[in-house]
Image (cartoon, rainbow, N blue to C red; front, top):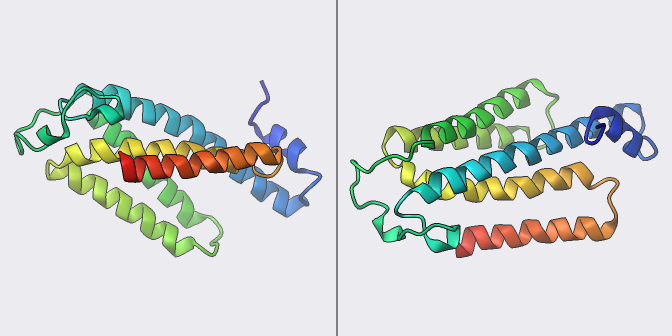
Amino acid sequence: MRYFTHDFYVNKLKAKYSAGDLEQKVDKCIKGAFKVVYFSIVFYLGLFQVLNKTNFAPTITFGGGDHRLALGNYPYSEMPTLLKSYYMLSMSYYVYDGIKHIFHTPKFDFWEMILHHIIAFMLLLDSYMNGFWIFSALILPQMDFEDIWIGLIRCIMDFAPDVVIVLVYAKIIVSWIFMRFIV
């Protein structure tokens, strides 16, 4: 299967971009495809294997708990089984992407992205070390869900039909509004 590989993207983009720009776009598409797969797996793990195994996951996050129980036994609340693995997966992505970002050619958002990765890692580490993992268990799946669609738009934005691009952008907006304001 040659879908979402280097050759696939080269064939899709070679008519639109020249040599230097082509490789840059292909790398961006491959990174987007990786994000789709990675964040789909991490979102599933976070939502259905970690968050929903707690007694505080509200029904809006497909849980059967009550969010008012979130800090009931703090700091002695029981940690879900796969939460440590979920933290490691989430923190490893920010470390990997931050280090990779340092060694790539700087773009206009270089310092913003470096700061983003450092702050995300520090927030995850701090919440874990201080026992506030409950908040991360609620917030991380929300961020992971949105990153799936952002990765998808990076994969297809240069060659997909306009209606598909508009639908994916709409999904990004709706997921952002739903996850940030409603959930």
